[in-house]
Amino acid sequence: MKDFPIVIQFLEESLVFKNVEKVFSRVWELLPFTHVLISAKNSYLLDAFVKQAHDRGVKIYLWKQVFHKIGGDEVPGQLVGLNLEPIQKPWICPNDTESTKRVIEELRFTIDNHDVDGLFIDVFRYPSPYDGLKSMLTCFCKSCVAKAEEMGIDLEKTRRGIKDFVERVRMLSVEEIASLSEVLDRSRAFHYLLEDLSIFDFLRFRSNSINHFVVDVKLLVEENGRELGLDVFPPSLSWLVGQDYPLLKDNCNWMKPMVYCNGLGPACMPAEIVNLVRELQKLNPRLSDKDLIYMISRFLELQLPYIDLNEIETKGLPDELVRLETARAKEAVDGNVPIYTGIEAVVTDICSTGPERVESYCKNAIEGGADGIVISWDVELVPSENLGVIRKIITPNI
Image (cartoon, rainbow, N blue to C red):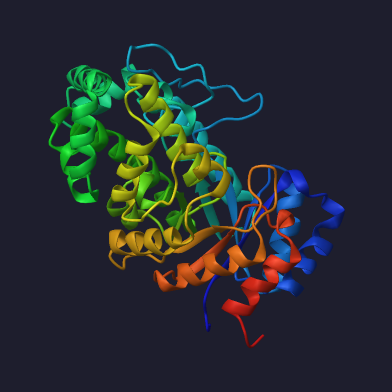
């Protein structure tokens, strides 16, 4: 396929400075790519990758996780939960000025000191179902209250409304669950949620908070003649973490929906869906696997051939979801920005993807209208045969 972007990702942890040229060349020989995303704190390593990329006419972006701080990093802007308790996890509140200013300055330093073509930001969101309901239903800190007031939203009233909604879920009877299962298709599910003003305001506030940060990053890259790529949840889940495609599309150069159908880590659809379901079952044990899988099928508009949650974890979700989520992403951005679908191709302890599935992912992404693909996650963990399959489909004449 002519001019079809192929994006690869490198994690610093798997790289040694003296091996950069060797590693880069190995992948290039197997699959000529157009973009590279590098997660690197080491300046020498980053510059070495910049040289290797530019020598081949490849665009290179610094890949940066934003609101989830790992390792020993200090977390000044702690999230506050539904019961006004601090969330004891290393997440930064997107409305904490001190925290976001620090992130922006880190990004500015990279652009000022390295010849990268742009930034690729990851984890610019609220916690997901993978982190549990307590972490997901945030944030109600003082910074958020003040920001909400600017939007005309009473966040304290919204918080009480969300608590009431959680209590209603807790009290659903078996008969009410059965009735809900039959009517809760995709459009009705959103209508059911958004007709509740508290939920509508909560989601609107969160998506605007995330987009406000992205606007600042976009201004930074534009001032320096660079580009911005976004790592986003797939459309079916993005609303849960504050990532609103129609808002974000005006503030980036391209978007990568993470349509991961097999993995069991954060942002992987099987793990996110199963964790959300189990959190709901903790609230209300009357919510059975069967009922919830049926509701998920209707929401995704994709028949799930499973009888319990364990099957979703062991078998993953159908490959067709790559096509559906790509098409939904394309519709959501309305042609404003390219959609580079993120597909799994690695073999790790949380995701083992063989060539047949990689081939299916690629074909489904193309059928869904993808403008390019991102081979996730670390290309050093992608077997050669998987790269060969992608090359055969995307660049058959090379």
